[in-house]
Length: 152
Image 1 (spheres, helix red, strand yellow):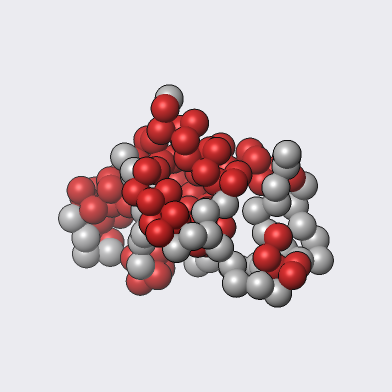
Image 2 (cartoon, helix red, strand yellow):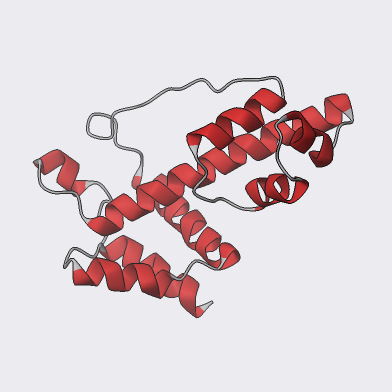
């Protein structure tokens, strides 16, 4: 049985915690990918390093390494500083999840990516499942992905 990650948006109900966690992680991954792609482009075009970027934004080199190493809960100030240090700024766009729901296969792929990120970064899927279960609003697709990533 396939279950959508965004059913409550259609129905106007409370959004389940597991769905909110999924979209938070997905945003962290997208933001990390943006920063990493931009850094790789900047490094290739200018031949400058993480150390130079760190100096430009008054951060320690290990902070830059940590920010670029894996998706994390970066502050907007940090994101702004990193992009500014590379001579760019972010542009934003949003899309409606209610009117133009992404294909279920895309959400499944994203769920797999989130589960992989949880494995790689050491985030504990069982902690998120426990938090979701406590709220009694665990989401079947997220649960399936979290369980499979935890067992891998």
